[in-house]
Amino acid sequence: MEAAAWEPVALLLASVVAGVLLLHLLGAAARTVREPLSTGPFSGGLEPREHPVSRFHARWYPVTMVFLAFDMEMLFMYPWARVVPEVGVPAVVEMFLFLGVLLAGVGYAWREGAFRWT
Figure: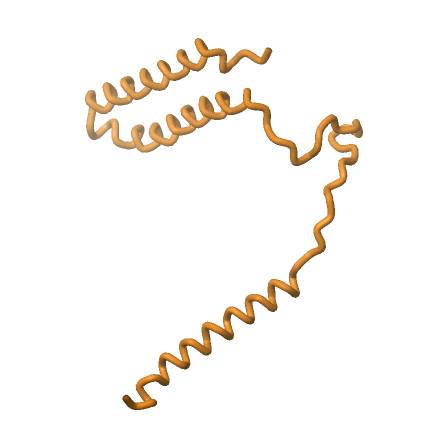
């Protein structure tokens, strides 16, 4: 086998190695010293009760899911509003079915206590 056939492979290997080394050197140059976060007064000057990077309480997750459900509703209602004049009554029926499913989800979340804060 000729050596000229391996030249593109060697060139590719050399460029990959050079790229990896360059990225490693750039990462080392841009590295910052990590220090623990300090909790100082903010938002009115009061001392915070918890660490700024603390986790959310579990009661926020059902509220987030209800918000996402209504967010998806709005995402589907914008194109629906454009199509409804062309499609007519079937589009209106489909949207009311969609809203019914979302309303059933809100009713379920309400029944399970997702909106109670105690």
